[in-house]
Image (cartoon, rainbow, N blue to C red; front, side, top):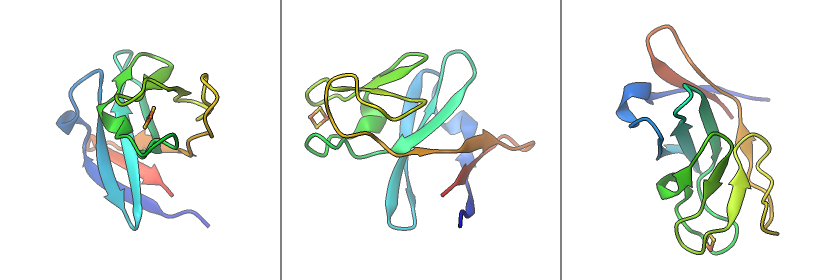
Amino acid sequence: MTTRHRLGPLEEIPIGEGRAYAVGDLMIAVFRLRDGGVRAVSAVCPHAGGPLADGLVDRRVVVCPLHQHTFDLGTGCSATGQPPLTVYPVVVDHDGRIVLEV
Ligand code: FES
């Protein structure tokens, strides 16, 4: 069963960057893409625990800042042989707040 969580305003995240949120006992990285899209994935890199919210993003992937492994933001799959990230449904509500389903 999924639960909806209202996080902070999308405007808290600079365009083209990510931010980590604690949701229950999970850490989830939310990215505000340059094309206006929003993506949410597990925030801890499966390679060695790097902070994915601090990684570089483009429209499709995030690159972990520690050892540069790359993950697809839509599927969570790694392009560089690592275990996948968990992808979470995320929308922005009419108040401009991030709403996540976990
Ligand atoms: S911890 Fe992310 S690539 Fe190593």
